[in-house]
Length: 284
Picture (cartoon, rainbow, N blue to C red):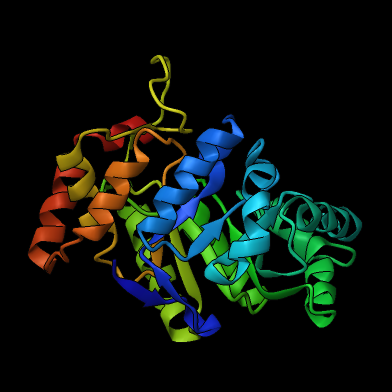
């Protein structure tokens, strides 16, 4: 599988980054099978959070022997220094590791939340102290909302984050406003040597009133051809990699699509964006 440099961290991450949200409700035996699958696929980067149900407990038993194999990024939704510091300690214990390669402020979806973590006594103070003590190496910010690109442009003006995580898919890029800010964010990250992880690359739209047929926060494309097209689109941008969708049934198709990634040219990207207009109203 292709690897790409994760910004100034220097880590050569596989373009499929394992999104541990898939372990939110899963037995240890089933989680072990998935860990074997991603190891066999060569995945070398994990994204996990305490808000992902049992994910930390399921990955923890793998860390004593396999810690050196993976670049591990963890996250917190705590917004205060004390809250973030305490949650970090709990995550280190559950994941059976002494350090994180990356620690991120998770789900920053409004400017008010950005204000909260960057103010005096905010979570970023805990991150900086943890880095000074050697508990973490790099600091990132993540989020899921349609306003994420705009918020992270402002975040990068306030603090020198090492990585950002944001949504990128051909459906939302069909919205001109989202596209403008997303392309500006990617260019800014490249100029600042900031690592870029993307989510929701295989999103069709929000669930709305539909029955949930996958353990994802959005309705995903779930056919191989559609997943391949969607990932070919998203990974053709200048980003590091895609945090795999939180559904173990879809995961093998996502891994296969990443292994068979085919970069699209500018005209093909534009055709995909045009086709995304069919689904884009679902986000309105």
